[in-house]
Length: 211
Image (cartoon, rainbow, N blue to C red; front, side, top):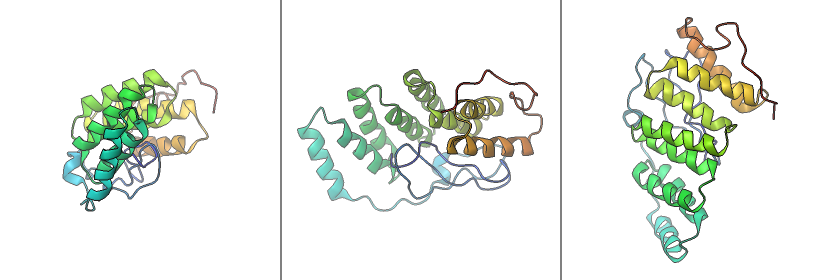
Protein backbone atom coordinates (compact mmCIF):
# COMPACT_ATOMS: atom_id res chain seq x y z
CA UNK A 1 0.00 0.00 0.00
CA UNK A 2 1.22 3.53 -0.50
CA UNK A 3 2.81 3.93 2.91
CA UNK A 4 5.95 3.10 4.87
CA UNK A 5 5.25 -0.39 6.16
CA UNK A 6 3.93 0.31 9.65
CA UNK A 7 0.31 0.27 10.74
CA UNK A 8 0.60 3.39 12.88
CA UNK A 9 3.27 5.37 14.65
CA UNK A 10 3.28 5.77 18.39
CA UNK A 11 3.58 9.16 20.07
CA UNK A 12 3.32 10.05 23.74
CA UNK A 13 2.19 7.66 26.44
CA UNK A 14 1.26 4.27 25.01
CA UNK A 15 -2.12 4.07 26.77
CA UNK A 16 -3.34 7.59 27.44
CA UNK A 17 -3.27 9.42 24.11
CA UNK A 18 -4.58 8.75 20.66
CA UNK A 19 -1.93 6.96 18.65
CA UNK A 20 -1.20 8.72 15.42
CA UNK A 21 -0.19 7.83 11.94
CA UNK A 22 -0.31 4.71 9.88
CA UNK A 23 2.41 3.74 7.53
CA UNK A 24 2.59 0.92 5.05
CA UNK A 25 5.36 -0.18 2.72
CA UNK A 26 5.69 2.12 -0.22
CA UNK A 27 4.71 5.84 0.00
CA UNK A 28 3.27 8.34 2.47
CA UNK A 29 -0.50 8.56 2.90
CA UNK A 30 -3.08 10.41 4.97
CA UNK A 31 -3.11 9.18 8.55
CA UNK A 32 -5.87 7.03 9.99
CA UNK A 33 -6.83 7.31 13.64
CA UNK A 34 -5.29 4.59 15.77
CA UNK A 35 -7.33 2.58 18.28
CA UNK A 36 -8.80 4.74 21.03
CA UNK A 37 -6.66 5.20 24.11
CA UNK A 38 -7.55 2.46 26.57
CA UNK A 39 -6.02 -0.59 28.15
CA UNK A 40 -7.82 -2.77 25.62
CA UNK A 41 -7.53 -1.99 21.92
CA UNK A 42 -10.75 -1.52 20.03
CA UNK A 43 -11.50 -2.97 16.63
CA UNK A 44 -9.56 -1.07 13.94
CA UNK A 45 -12.76 -0.65 11.93
CA UNK A 46 -14.45 1.18 14.78
CA UNK A 47 -11.71 3.81 14.82
CA UNK A 48 -11.14 4.15 11.10
CA UNK A 49 -11.60 7.53 9.47
CA UNK A 50 -14.17 8.04 6.73
CA UNK A 51 -12.44 7.07 3.51
CA UNK A 52 -12.65 9.33 0.43
CA UNK A 53 -14.81 8.12 -2.47
CA UNK A 54 -13.19 5.45 -4.60
CA UNK A 55 -12.23 6.50 -8.12
CA UNK A 56 -14.27 3.80 -9.85
CA UNK A 57 -12.97 4.69 -13.31
CA UNK A 58 -9.38 4.23 -12.15
CA UNK A 59 -10.26 0.95 -10.46
CA UNK A 60 -11.98 -0.27 -13.62
CA UNK A 61 -9.01 0.67 -15.78
CA UNK A 62 -6.60 -1.14 -13.46
CA UNK A 63 -8.84 -4.22 -13.41
CA UNK A 64 -8.93 -4.22 -17.20
CA UNK A 65 -5.14 -4.11 -17.27
CA UNK A 66 -4.91 -6.91 -14.72
CA UNK A 67 -7.35 -9.04 -16.72
CA UNK A 68 -5.36 -8.52 -19.89
CA UNK A 69 -2.02 -9.17 -18.17
CA UNK A 70 -2.36 -12.20 -15.90
CA UNK A 71 1.34 -12.07 -14.97
CA UNK A 72 1.35 -8.36 -14.10
CA UNK A 73 2.04 -8.16 -10.37
CA UNK A 74 2.57 -4.39 -10.31
CA UNK A 75 -0.97 -3.60 -11.44
CA UNK A 76 -2.35 -5.94 -8.80
CA UNK A 77 -0.30 -4.21 -6.11
CA UNK A 78 -1.64 -0.87 -7.36
CA UNK A 79 -5.19 -2.18 -7.09
CA UNK A 80 -4.49 -3.43 -3.58
CA UNK A 81 -3.13 -0.02 -2.64
CA UNK A 82 -6.12 1.75 -4.15
CA UNK A 83 -8.65 -0.34 -2.29
CA UNK A 84 -6.70 -0.19 0.97
CA UNK A 85 -6.60 3.60 0.87
CA UNK A 86 -10.37 3.64 0.56
CA UNK A 87 -10.90 1.20 3.44
CA UNK A 88 -11.97 -1.58 1.09
CA UNK A 89 -9.81 -4.07 2.92
CA UNK A 90 -11.33 -7.29 1.60
CA UNK A 91 -10.78 -6.05 -1.97
CA UNK A 92 -7.24 -5.03 -1.05
CA UNK A 93 -6.59 -8.53 0.31
CA UNK A 94 -7.74 -10.08 -2.96
CA UNK A 95 -5.34 -8.05 -5.06
CA UNK A 96 -2.40 -8.29 -2.67
CA UNK A 97 -2.84 -12.06 -2.62
CA UNK A 98 -2.87 -12.19 -6.43
CA UNK A 99 0.27 -10.05 -6.56
CA UNK A 100 1.98 -12.21 -3.98
CA UNK A 101 1.11 -15.36 -5.93
CA UNK A 102 3.05 -13.86 -8.83
CA UNK A 103 5.89 -12.51 -6.68
CA UNK A 104 5.99 -14.77 -3.60
CA UNK A 105 9.20 -13.22 -2.30
CA UNK A 106 7.91 -9.64 -2.30
CA UNK A 107 8.23 -8.76 1.38
CA UNK A 108 6.49 -5.40 1.08
CA UNK A 109 3.38 -6.91 -0.48
CA UNK A 110 3.31 -9.69 2.09
CA UNK A 111 3.47 -7.18 4.92
CA UNK A 112 0.83 -4.96 3.33
CA UNK A 113 -1.41 -8.02 3.11
CA UNK A 114 -0.89 -8.60 6.83
CA UNK A 115 -1.80 -4.99 7.57
CA UNK A 116 -5.03 -5.40 5.58
CA UNK A 117 -5.88 -8.48 7.63
CA UNK A 118 -5.34 -6.49 10.81
CA UNK A 119 -7.75 -3.80 9.65
CA UNK A 120 -10.29 -6.56 9.00
CA UNK A 121 -9.96 -7.43 12.70
CA UNK A 122 -8.02 -10.62 11.96
CA UNK A 123 -4.89 -10.24 14.10
CA UNK A 124 -3.97 -13.93 13.91
CA UNK A 125 -4.06 -13.85 10.11
CA UNK A 126 -1.98 -10.68 10.20
CA UNK A 127 0.66 -12.26 12.41
CA UNK A 128 0.77 -15.37 10.23
CA UNK A 129 1.32 -13.19 7.18
CA UNK A 130 4.06 -11.24 8.95
CA UNK A 131 5.75 -14.57 9.72
CA UNK A 132 5.73 -15.23 5.99
CA UNK A 133 7.36 -11.82 5.44
CA UNK A 134 10.11 -12.68 7.90
CA UNK A 135 10.67 -16.03 6.21
CA UNK A 136 11.50 -14.00 3.12
CA UNK A 137 13.55 -11.36 4.93
CA UNK A 138 14.20 -11.85 8.67
CA UNK A 139 15.63 -8.31 8.89
CA UNK A 140 12.60 -6.50 7.45
CA UNK A 141 12.23 -3.87 10.15
CA UNK A 142 8.80 -2.62 9.16
CA UNK A 143 7.42 -6.12 9.52
CA UNK A 144 8.84 -6.30 13.05
CA UNK A 145 7.25 -2.92 13.84
CA UNK A 146 3.89 -4.18 12.64
CA UNK A 147 4.22 -7.38 14.64
CA UNK A 148 4.67 -5.24 17.75
CA UNK A 149 1.58 -3.17 16.93
CA UNK A 150 -0.61 -6.20 16.29
CA UNK A 151 0.64 -7.97 19.39
CA UNK A 152 -0.01 -4.86 21.51
CA UNK A 153 -3.39 -3.84 20.12
CA UNK A 154 -4.73 -6.97 18.47
CA UNK A 155 -3.58 -9.54 21.03
CA UNK A 156 -2.94 -7.43 24.17
CA UNK A 157 0.49 -9.08 24.32
CA UNK A 158 2.81 -6.34 25.57
CA UNK A 159 5.74 -8.70 26.15
CA UNK A 160 5.54 -9.86 22.53
CA UNK A 161 5.25 -6.29 21.34
CA UNK A 162 8.34 -5.27 23.30
CA UNK A 163 10.34 -8.14 21.83
CA UNK A 164 9.33 -7.15 18.29
CA UNK A 165 10.25 -3.49 18.78
CA UNK A 166 13.55 -4.37 20.44
CA UNK A 167 14.33 -6.50 17.39
CA UNK A 168 13.93 -3.45 15.15
CA UNK A 169 16.54 -1.61 17.22
CA UNK A 170 18.90 -4.60 17.08
CA UNK A 171 18.66 -4.82 13.30
CA UNK A 172 18.95 -1.14 12.36
CA UNK A 173 19.68 1.00 15.43
CA UNK A 174 20.18 4.25 13.50
CA UNK A 175 17.11 3.94 11.27
CA UNK A 176 13.82 5.82 11.37
CA UNK A 177 12.16 2.50 12.13
CA UNK A 178 14.32 2.15 15.24
CA UNK A 179 13.30 5.67 16.30
CA UNK A 180 9.65 4.64 15.99
CA UNK A 181 10.35 1.46 17.96
CA UNK A 182 12.01 3.47 20.73
CA UNK A 183 8.93 5.71 20.94
CA UNK A 184 6.73 2.65 21.23
CA UNK A 185 8.93 1.10 23.90
CA UNK A 186 9.03 4.34 25.89
CA UNK A 187 5.25 4.53 25.76
CA UNK A 188 4.80 0.96 26.92
CA UNK A 189 7.25 1.32 29.78
CA UNK A 190 5.80 4.64 30.87
CA UNK A 191 2.36 3.05 31.26
CA UNK A 192 3.58 -0.40 32.32
CA UNK A 193 7.01 -0.19 34.03
CA UNK A 194 6.99 -3.90 34.78
CA UNK A 195 6.84 -4.86 31.11
CA UNK A 196 9.72 -7.19 30.25
CA UNK A 197 12.16 -7.26 27.36
CA UNK A 198 15.90 -7.14 27.13
CA UNK A 199 16.22 -3.43 27.88
CA UNK A 200 13.82 -3.55 30.83
CA UNK A 201 15.65 -6.50 32.35
CA UNK A 202 19.10 -4.98 31.98
CA UNK A 203 20.23 -7.62 29.51
CA UNK A 204 21.23 -7.46 25.89
CA UNK A 205 20.54 -9.76 23.00
CA UNK A 206 23.17 -10.57 20.38
CA UNK A 207 23.46 -7.63 18.06
CA UNK A 208 23.11 -7.88 14.30
CA UNK A 209 25.30 -5.66 12.21
CA UNK A 210 23.67 -2.21 11.70
CA UNK A 211 22.46 -1.43 8.22
